[in-house]
Amino acid sequence: MDQIKAPIGANKRKTIVGRGTGSKGRTAGRGHDGQNSRSGGGTRPGFEGGQMPLYRRIAHRGFSNYPFKKEYTVVNVSTLAEKFVAGEIVSEKTLREKGLLKGKNSLVKILGDGEIKIKLDIQVGKVTSGAKEKIEKAGGKVLDMIVDKEGSDV
Image 1 (cartoon, helix red, strand yellow):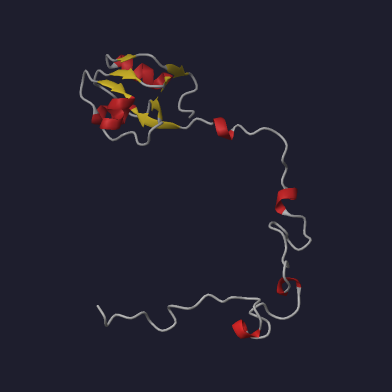
Image 2: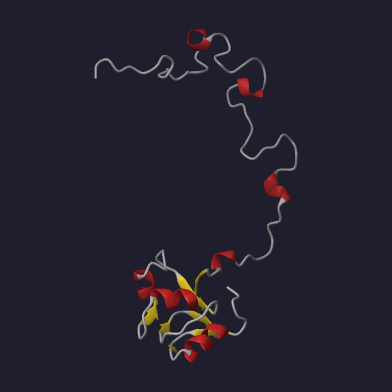
């Protein structure tokens, strides 16, 4: 252990600027004349050299719905047919147990892509009308949810 050493140049002392010629020569590492060589020098954050700054170029009016956006995890009926056996209840809890849902606050939407031939009871947030048709045709039920008329619009 006592033979291990850091390579040359790995450990450098911090340069202390503005403390006279003894620290880093005459200019103390600040270069020669100019705004940044002086105490209190430099520009404010966001200054772009006189060009119209970004925060002034971008509009700040209006409303954005982004904070209220809801993102759904989509699950196709073909996936349900693969992961579940006949007679099971499909809920957020069972989807999480089967590894189809990740994260704490996932909203679920069942899409009608693929085929399903087993009877399942569905208890999730949203189901498309096509998925509901296929599930009921297979003998299952859709309970406590909103049916989307538009199809797979998430």
